[in-house]
Amino acid sequence: MRGLISPQAFIKSHRMHLKKLQFSLLFLLLVTSCITAQDIHFTQYNMSQMTLNPANTGGFEGTVRIGGIYRSQWTSVLKSNQYETPSLWVDAPIIRGFRRNDWVGVGLMLFQDKVGVGSLVHSASKLGAAYHLGLGKGGKTVLTLGAHYGQETYRVGDPNEFRFGDGLKQGNYLLDKDYIALNGTGSGPSGGNNDPKSNYSDIDAGIALTSKLNKTTDFKIGFAMYHLGQPSFGLPTGGGGTSPSTGSFKQPRRYVATGVFNLKTSDRMTISPSFIFQTMNKQDEIMVQGLAGYLFDPEKDITLQAGLGYRLGDAINLIVGAKKKGLTVGLAYDVNTSGLNNDTRNRGGFEIAANYIVKIYKKSVVKPKLLCPRF
Image 1: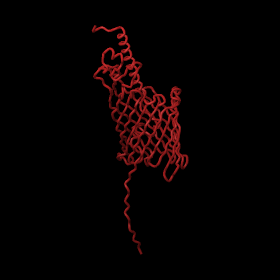
Image 2 (image 1 turned 180 degrees about the vertical axis):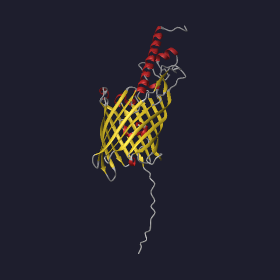
Image 3 (image 1 turned 60 degrees about the vertical axis):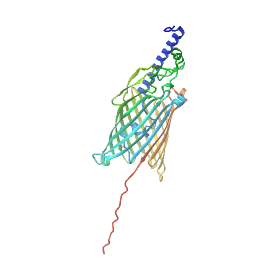
Image 4 (image 1 turned 30 degrees about the horizontal axis):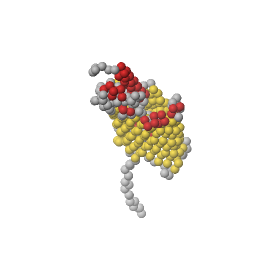
């Protein structure tokens, strides 16, 4: 008889709704934890200057800087669904400032942070600008103020990858055998959104101080704040049906303090200790590193680099790299030392990075002079 349902079907229906509730809670937890505790970060933070601090935009000697970095982590646990973070940028010092030793730098930064099963993706495209104020005699000390402005996006790349015991899948396509049995169709509810996402505008700001103390020592320290306006946004929290609920999230600010010191110990050797401290939503990250550079070939200007670092409570950093004139390349590997090392087998993240500074200078024209000797 129409309108009646068997006890078996009734039990299956309630079990299906329970699974939907469990999924919604799990999905909400995943999104919340990734948004509030995970923001873009790299082991080779000094190789990614525009993601490190907006004040680094255009802060170099040259015409244009082009760079990129790629990070992959948790491959030993998540297999093909690991965290992946590529980033690209280009920046340049474009014009002189109000004073002789001042200049203005501009740049463009792109990044994407892809997280595990279901491909929760955090991506951004931001324009940056910085004013570099030369201080002291000869501009040996530079104070810089910078900012980023652009769009950030959170989206679920493939909601159908979320799977549960009896085949429940997310994405508003509920392909569960109980749903099919109760509704007599295999198509699932119509009108679903298979690519939920949320966009918002974002502003970052930073300050940096660079100084050359003497012929052998220089340093750079900086402080930056990300997500200044703490923008709010929402993502569907699953559960199937034509009108999924939407969670509202407020992006917490991220505070970053950094420092690097370059000590030239001989004609060929340079030691560069550095640190980064960042905090976001009461989650802290502290990392210290020491990098040694050896001028292997002075004629070809080739420098080899190697170093170690430690992210407190998480991983040991192994770093190698090389410089040749305007090109710098680097590799890093994290040896996991946290409580997850039984599952990760001490394998953490892998990074590859490169920066290239193009130097285009106008050739000077020397007008010859004829000297006529006098007798």
